Amino acid sequence: MKHTMFSLKKFDYKKIRNIKDKTVRKILLGFGLTAVIFIILILAFLLMEGLPFFFNGDSIDFFTGDVWDPSSPNIPRYGILPMVLGTFLVTLGAIVIAVPIGVGCSIYLAEIAHPKIRETLKPVIEILAGIPSVVYGFFALVVLSAWIDDFFHSTTRLNALTGSIMLAVMMLPIIISLSEDAIRSVPREMKEASLALGLTKWDTIRGVVIPAALSGITAAIILGVARAIGETMTVLMATGNAPVISFDMLTSMRTMTATIAVEMGEVPFGSIHYHALFAVGIVLFVITFVINFIADKVMKRFREKY
Amino acid sequence: MSEDIEIETKNLNLWYGDKQALKNINMKIPEEKVTAVIGPSGCGKSTLIRCFNRMNDIIDCCRVKGTILIDGKDIYNKKMDVVELRKNVGMVFQKPNPFPKSIYENIAYAPRIHGLKNKKKLNKAVEKCLKQAFIWDEVKDRLGDSAKSLSGGQQQRLCIARALAVEPEILLMDEPCSALDPIATAKIEELIRYLSKEYTVVIVTHNMQQAARVSDYTAYMYIGELIEFGKTKQIFENPYEESTENYITGRFG
Image 1: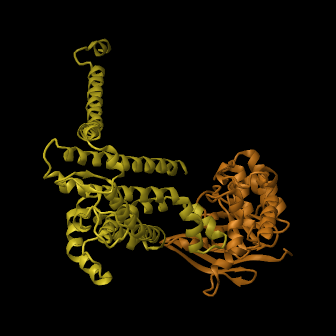
Image 2 (image 1 turned 60 degrees about the vertical axis):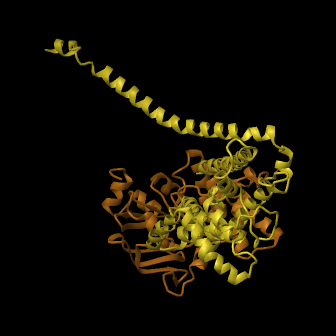
Image 3 (image 1 turned 120 degrees about the horizontal axis):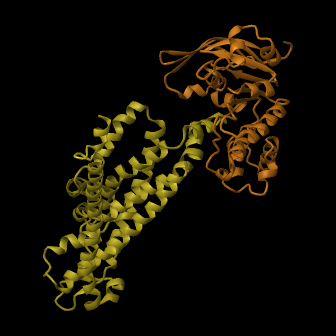
């Protein structure tokens, strides 16, 4: 009997196992590669459609010109500066509003709130991230702009401030959720050491917890900013869409994303204007890529810490 | 015992939720001596010393009954200022836990908040504490470096220096050597002997040789109860209780 057990070659289990193992690995590798392929394809498409602008259009005016007027009957102008400024100001406004609230809220949730309150509040905040941006935009358009009009008596109901406030609300869940994780991962022993020195809870938060969680909080803020820069629908609906150079938060502005979204539908395929919009897309891609890259570096430092 | 008493517990009971972790502890810890608390894992040694600076307060389900007197004052009294208490009762933890700051800032942080703003005086205080903790010579040229760049043993001595910086009278040590190698341990033990000239030290350890080496008094605990408390020599050479003897001779634990 012993002899037959080892000579049963009909079912070579080892071989079958190996084949199974290899197949599964290959399939998973395929899934993994899909994501990479998509990114490469998107980038290739963006470059293919955007680069012709730099060969045929006025590249210098693109980066330095202060007028974006592609449909002018005389000389169409493709200056990206008003939109870069628009994106920059609207995002900056959002950062100024969202960072203190977001970081403060995450400190409250992680360090001060009773566990029961945290268990309820955190999911609610995370729901904010799931609301479609068009809903935010609609809210900005109808409700928020009226409030801002009442409060500031602005010349235009839709302006950069409306967009900033709305973007801030959209950044909050990212900032809160990620900063809270960072703060909660500060070792308990470190907090105890501080309390044991006769320092108050506030001293401990200020002097020990926040410095220890700082890189995590920074990464959270950067990711929130990346979200704000890439956001399209909300700013399109909230900021009033005027590609002008202005530093007044109460005037209408237009972001890079909104420009692409508004004009892409009406542009003749293959025209300079069409390629110019893709060129704007390339600039946007580079900006978000750099931001994500920085966030990744900061996060890595944060992970190495403990 | 002719010494002055620094810490006295009277019928101390403590619960984590429904589980009783300390049962009717009565002990008197003398001033400016080293008292070791020994016993098998989970017997409540750490819980006991964490009562002395009310560190258990931050654990939600923890309840304490009974009295602890430090310098004759009931520390669980409602009027007790916990911040003041903790300034007076320093603590060193099992794992070295320096702050994510420079070596200098680790020491200077607490005294500065407690009101020592003068730069010169602060520098002096930092130097004094680092010298007291036998680490000054190793770090004096690199005070601005991150505390994380130190070795485990150095970090632990830094943590001791940090605890000394707020000028406590009592120093609680919760297995301060359990994460360290023998050489670092020897240094810390030497330090403990030296510190007992000025401070009351209570050290939790489950290394019996360590208790025998460093302490003047030893408390033996078993499942939340204080089984025996006395001079270290007596506990180790001639314990009254059988349980103590069994533990010390290594029959269990």
